[in-house]
Image (cartoon, rainbow, N blue to C red; front, side):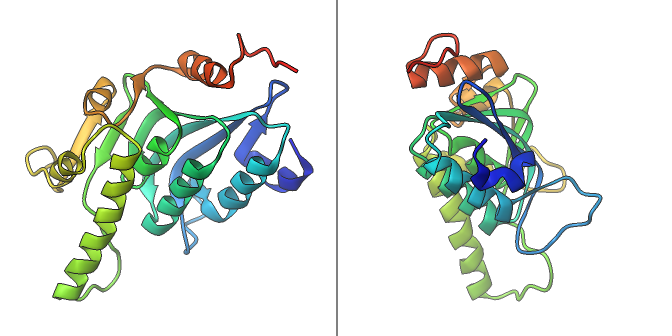
Length: 218
């Protein structure tokens, strides 16, 4: 790993074949710190890490391991945008969960996998704290949701109208709106590219790198 992101090395590991492995787990922490007992992915650490990886010639590709319940919408979307802008091959593997704002993060990679038991949850945007029940508030919510839907649609094979329908589904969750997709259901919906596990994820990344069995070419 380069010295540029040595101080945040716990967020990723680079091996001799030039593949960086980055975990996006727990809750995506944003502008406010969460309880110290919470497992979080701190976006203020992830952004400089990804920026330094883009400039590091020794790193050839990135595998993202995703297991997140979502988190701060603004920061999660910023993280997804940065992942999508990386010029090196990227692959994501959803393990466990990719909920809420975790979905744009998962589909931001060049190619995405999901294990058979993992879930994708699509639901409307929520806000905490005091909220004014006005038309302006509704428009703000709608604007945020449109940004999320637009990003996911542009980085997957699922149309915007279908994503919005799944987001506003009323028959699946007892106390909430939204849709839960398990494993291959997320693939059938066109959101995730393929159902697979770590072997398939590595194989796809090596394929994108034009390498065989992870053997680095000079």
